Length: 138
Length: 135
Image (cartoon, rainbow over the protein chains, first blue to last red):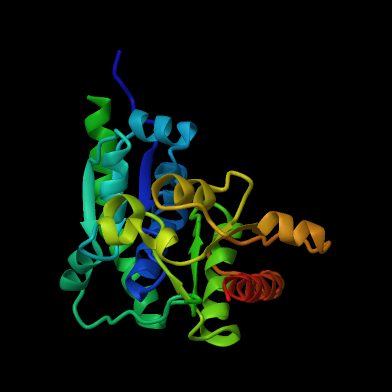
């Protein structure tokens, strides 16, 4: 019987001091609400950091994408440190290089350029989600 | 020597509206209510960062602000850094004041922002109390 992945977990960095943290969060919401609803889901990074057993079980049972605002890669490192694997990891800079000219600003609420970049980045990630689901199904 | 500022660690929970509330409340305290009196650290830096980050709650008095009863920020701060001076939870603050919880995780509604303002006021008062005790 084929092993089927039910979901793809997307874990954003939670960065609170910079707009890039807000952007990682916004990309995650774009992905789980608009681009891949019902397939991509998120987990609070705080649950991962605090070692919540239900959250860690979910990450171990499904493919995981991490999205980090900066090079410190808190999301990726936290998931790995708690014994789970990361199937694909991204930094905001990956998307900024791909979609030049969009400069995100704002922390509590992103500016229009940040919103646009989040939307485009989530579209980019649709293919990644599909790949992970298909790989799990093989 | 008295501490001149207080550390605040929010859960920033991505799954729940109250996690977003913690971000709004902290930003309001830092930028409007108690500018220059608070600092923060991204919660996952307790794992991903170095020794300097893990000294955060030991170096100065720290308040944790969690969205829900799972208290991720409080638990992680105590386990990975140091015992928080005070631990606040959004759901408890709002319940005590008879205010409905926020409804939107992504973009807070006007009612959600009003609730976040209440949480920010409570956080600011707690900052004052912690600073006063440190003097």
